[in-house]
Image (cartoon, rainbow, N blue to C red; front, side, top):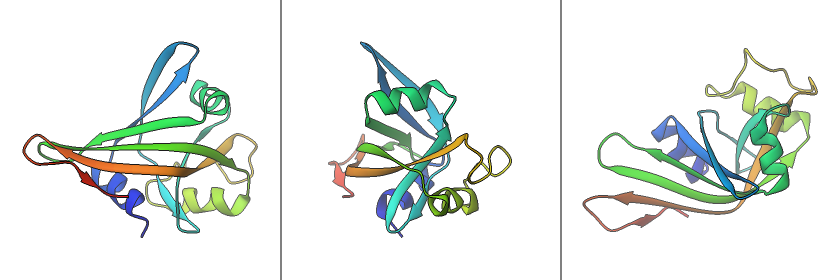
Length: 130
């Protein structure tokens, strides 16, 4: 399994940071899946987060593990319009099955590229995941 997907699933809820003009924006996500060896996240194309990612595709994700450690992922989000990619997200246990359908014109998925993931702890040195 893709290491970033594996780690994001461990934290369960992670926060996606975007930029809107000169203001940072953060919101919780829980859907993440692997498709063709890459990490993917998703959202609706009617949401502000979608507009923010399209305008500035550099994002950061962060989530807490159980205990005193956390994950930080920097990436570039590239929209993938293929139905197969959408199905991969919807078929994943974390996917938003009840909210969207593949090809519904509202559901979008983003492949994470240029990924750097680091696990941090209050008690040990940072551990580079990838």
